Image (cartoon, rainbow, N blue to C red):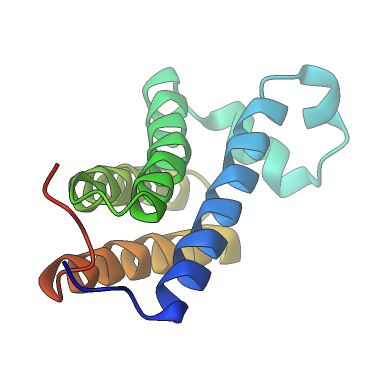
Length: 132
C-alpha cells in the first residue's frame, strides 16, 4: 500500500468537518424553535420538504461524514459510501430546486459531495486505500 500524500489527510479531514456541520444542520432542522429563527428561504425549504426528502438529506450528510471518516481510516469502502452520499445529495438538490429553485447552499453541497467522491476514487486508484 502506498503512503498518502499529506494533502489526503487535509482533504479527508476538511470533508469530515464539512459533513459534520451538515449533520448538525440536519439535527437543528428537527427543532421547530431553531427553524423559526432561520431566514425565510430556509424555513420554506424545510416546511415544503416531504418526509422522504428529509430522510435522504440525513443519508447525504451522515453518509458523507461516514465516508470521510472511512477515508481517514484508509478504507476502500469509503468510495461506495461517498457515492451513496452523492446520490442522496443529488436527490435533495432536485427536491429543493423544484420547491424553491436552485440555492447557493445546495449548489455548494453538490459540488463538495461530487469532489469528495471524485477524490476518493483517485485515492483508491493510487493505492492509498485498503480493501479491508
